[in-house]
Length: 204
Image (tube, rainbow, N blue to C red; front, side):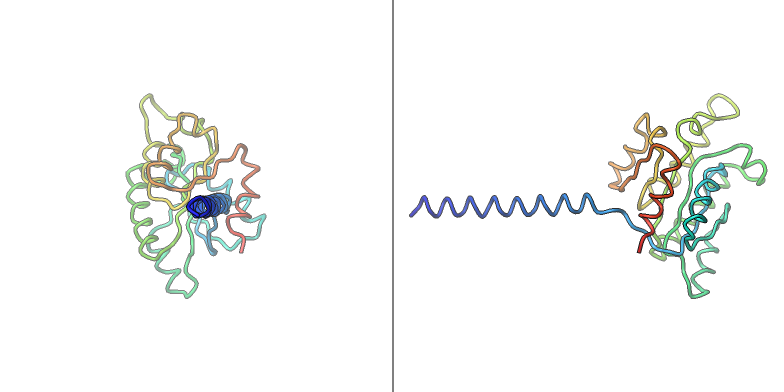
């Protein structure tokens, strides 16, 4: 009798473990989702957002592209009755781009900080993206320029989802953020993959 009870208990334990494993695998395979409309913007004024804009238009997604979006843009959109459900903030600093916009990296960080604060207040999903790879991270007008890294620090640890080109994570920069903050991360090899990724993320 004891052997029967023991065998039954072991069987139930194995069944429970199998169920937990199945549920864990299902959760891991579940694609990350975000709602529409979405706001596309930049932290650092690099060309990255323009590249995403091309695919967003091709997919005919409901989005707005405001390169220097502010917290007020989120507030006004909410007042209109069709609030943003997500925001994509593309990191990557371009000294040329910031110069043309008449802003510094500190200006960009302060604006982005307020934008993220309002997004969290409204429950808007924040997607932090870096799509220009290590080449963008290595660029700078002078040795020691860390504008790109500052833009990453301002956005990625505060995000709900990371969308990262794989070669930009050669040093594990984004992997560490993802692991330490428990933020899901999607890695991709080439920018052409973005169309399918965005289609999946914003699928109903």
